[in-house]
Length: 430
Image (tube, rainbow, N blue to C red):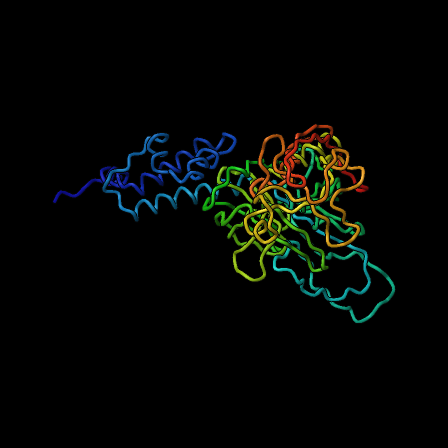
């Protein structure tokens, strides 16, 4: 058999689908390296729909013969996914920051574990009594979290529970180690989100906000965060394990809140990752990492980024969070609740009071009160859109602005009726 020359060997190797893909990936990475989004932006859509082979043949001109084995196809997919991950991390890491929490303290007692099935990703150092108290308080680091820059002038998204201590000081550490004092601009009363601000020199790198409504179960995602408040910009990769989850999360201080419509992911996330971005393969933020499970490995949750977009826009425009408010407490109905309580409909928002006497179903003087809504009414639709577990009342209301008038279809005392409510701006007195 005639021995091949070096050039001929190279040509034969290029015919191998694995080698061909690897070379093409490298070529594309170089070619688009100067274009915003890089390789990740180019191929992100292909992975989001899991139709890579047809997409590659049509878009890149690759030819996959029928005799390409399953093993080769898996290797091809791995090459592309790894390349996309590297591109996303390189592009995104400069815009991910660590947040250091400091307080003036004497003795610090150990902090015990919480009693909630899901813990926030915030991290408090396991302090113990110092053994002596000389009466001289000192500034000490007491915890940490993560955030990401969304405007070049220094607005940063993080979790509310990371910056909820009004007696603490917050320092932002950029990826290059430069530190800046941070001001808490706004905290959201309904979601575990907050906006902080730093006065940095020059324009800061930012992350692009994606569309969390387009997420698919099984889609690859990347988490970046300040793991254990020690390992800055730790990177993990996984998939979307579930969407529209409802979880109750708490911290080590006994505080808790309900996270609606949470994104579940198996991307490994550790304490200290609170407020970090969950990214798709196009390098876009699709969620804000928030809570993890104590009972199961690789069970973490993130707030959908679409819930944060209006908050960012509001703080940029008004310097505060401007949120529409209707003024009701409610429970979303489903089959089991309807059957258990003998309710005639299995969807809608049932207007109910809270457990405590002061937690009224209808807030006096609220838009709901002015519109004539009553306790035990069921809000079936908002402007023609059905209210159910996939579209809860809070999500529907948040699509509007204070001053907007909305039409409500309501089931009241067994009869359907339509009322109009004018939304108002929420404030702490509400």
